[in-house]
Length: 411
Image (cartoon, rainbow, N blue to C red):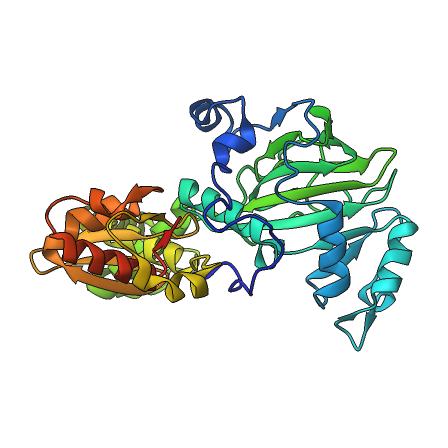
């Protein structure tokens, strides 16, 4: 069920690890709209446009200078960097060497003549975007990706299309005018990609201009296109790599077929014959659906997806070398806090307290359960404020272990 490449080393932030990404999540992205209104009225239902008249609102996430640094110094290859132009054909041969090496000078020449520079999975290499994606992942329980689009003035990178995943569009610089059309496939699955020969665009349903600081949400399946304004446009497309009930049902059916021989029976002999009576087949099919509903273990299947989700979210451990170097200085008065770039789950039984994080099971004594939960749910506290289930020596031992594991940090 893996959805996303493993993140590479991250670069490019002047903020301290403790400040990185703080408060930048769904609520911040769609403000002043509330999360509750978003879930009830917009999520998977209709587009949302948030206008702010605040061009610096998303400036802490990305800048034009940072994009230039990524393009010119990190050695990214095709197809991480691609060029798109809805008005004229551009191929990878036009700006690559040996098939995947990027000719940066040629990239900028093509940009000058109307092509959009697309940077895929930029959260792999820009620390602020990684932290932002992680905060959103914590809210949604889905993996996220951030693609970045640098478009010259009065240009259009892609022709009208729909995406098979929901997207948020964050305008960083310049402006783009967007048009949404029909929804030929409502909530398409992965693999149900837009095909202009099959899917009709439909009539325009919404037109809006995103200026720097503005944000839009476009559900999957909604056809759209966009053209930049009179200056260079830079925007981030934040993609939600969701799982659906279809995915969960397929997992449940797989379990049913392993645990119940009824699912493994052959189809009725002769089912393809024209004179075959399908009534008995309908009865058997209804029986299988009933057995699936009655015998499926929803918790076990959801746990599987939860494990896959957490395994796709490696902790962001910027500054860990310094944290380890100063472990001996940690005292009862030291102020520590849970790392913002960590997604974990705490389990407790009569034998141990276990923290699941990025495919690891980190075990602690059962008597440390309250202290572990407290530590991982607070962004700032003194070591001495841990619950008194542990004595002072135990508190220091636990905090140092949590720091070593990358779950906690001195702030």
